[in-house]
Length: 162
Image 1 (cartoon, rainbow, N blue to C red):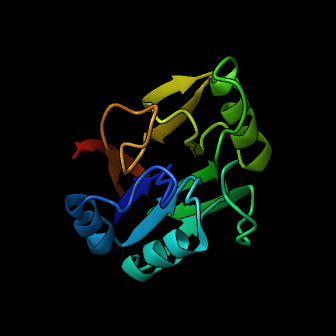
Image 2: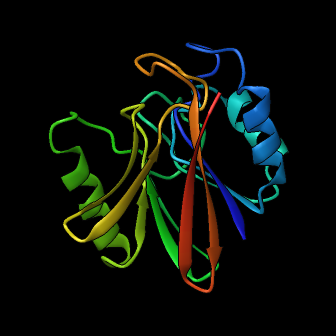
């Protein structure tokens, strides 16, 4: 199963659209995970239209667009806990790892955004993924996303830049 991991699109406040190479990856994915800060109902609708299936959470910059703060989804034998990660950069990894443990277990993978910085690290025994900003919205210095291939509990993650 192929998964597109994106976050922090910030459309229209900081960007006009997701770059075409990322749009192609999103459309081709079996499932899309968005870790918040769509920035508008239009941006959410646009991602929903591209995605075969979507798991998404709201971020601190999202208007009231009906998204939960946390979501858990099992894909290809891997449990993903999605949250935006809102708060100070200090304590970010602790905060996200705590959400993962509260929602599932340390074996689950946390997906979060907020910092606009790519992360693939293990913190306190929890693997944390942050795809950065899919549009390169400030403070990011480039547009980034992650793709993941999951198969029978095995997870392989790849970084993409536009």
